[in-house]
Image (tube, rainbow, N blue to C red):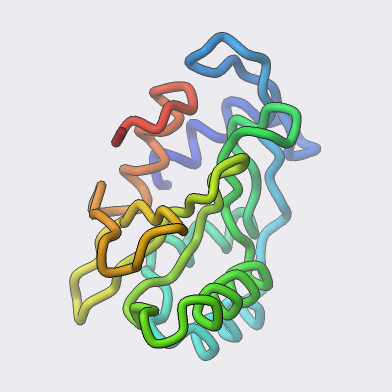
Length: 164
């Protein structure tokens, strides 16, 4: 089992919800979705030009998206489920037009900010990039190498944007 699943499962109850304090000592919630079907994951794989990394597919098979460190709908991390992955990426690709980087798949909306986290997938190499939406995709910076490590760091830092 991936380490982040253990960490998430320590916070949530059988209803897939739980409470935890943020690094700012604010009460926040985790709200996870039920697992995605293989059909939903296949649809993402086909629709998203760059595909999905194996560790995010593993996440989707356990939770089809969810929210971490949600504070009253104005702060936190929204991990995108299968339909949201398709919709958010299609919208941003249309929004950026020819400036869009076809190797990027946005997978996490940073609630309350015009920011996302994305996978930059080049051949066999995957990086996590910090996507500030009022900058061009060519300016987005790599912050980590795997989804597993990223989520562990977010949880262990109690929801801090550790890369800033």
